[in-house]
Image (cartoon, rainbow, N blue to C red; front, side, top):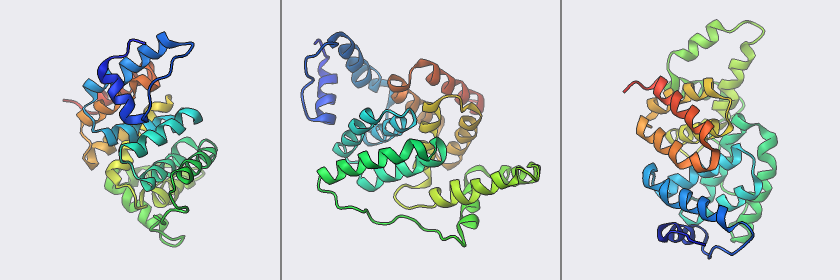
Length: 248
């Protein structure tokens, strides 16, 4: 295969082994040169962040074999076991528990193979009694007064969904240790754009990312890093959302 020198170096750094000859060498050449060379010239992300957002994408698009590869690559560049678990936990409210539970088994198997003691240290910070208040506090710190308006404008038979967002989505997950809120918002953005069809939520979390310190360039860098993995339609939709929300 005619793999560029930089792509091969990046491959070895991530996976620690040579690309093997196979039945689809032409495709592997195209994929490797683009994802591990050309695309990385323009995403400007540090290696750890790049692997964290790629890991998030593999959860969103539900590719267990590629998720396994992404976990190993993340560990190889310094993403900690706790950070990997927290990315997986953070995905639950955005992709649903059915897409996450099987990946927990994959993750734990890799950790055991690498001698990582399980269970990991607990990262939760809330209780059943305070999760709503703590979650609402985090929500407002990210999105501001729009949260109060969402409660005010929600019909009586739907206000429980707003409560779920506060106590579950934010109270159960965003309040956890292991990842700060800024990183969680970038992970959430990565998950949403990778799923596709979530453009209203993508726009909301673009604004949330900006509010917690992830600027337009960071979001564009993330889309660039993920483009080889999620394709052009979802990437172009994400860029349209970014340009619509952030006017500069």
